[in-house]
Image 1 (cartoon, one colour):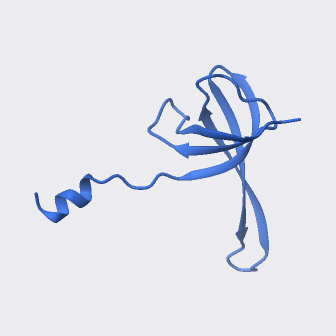
Image 2 (cartoon, helix red, strand yellow):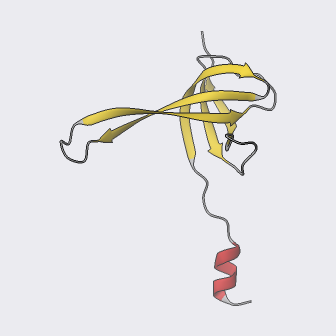
Image 3 (tube, one colour):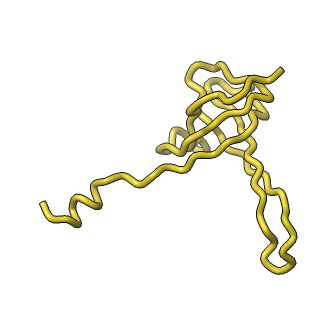
Length: 92
């Protein structure tokens, strides 16, 4: 095998995000809100930007308020492209 074939067969690193569960009303799906601090391109002010990620929760054990780490995965449904890696902190 050539060097280029070996390099392309290796998988890219997957995105990992941390966020807070905002909804768990669906079956085996949770909505995780990830807050990101970004700089405004023109005014250089730091802004908070929220993104909602639909996360696969196989065991249905996530509750609203849990802090979780999620990882990008293949498309599991129309909107679901993330899965739970670990629960960092349970809601009180």
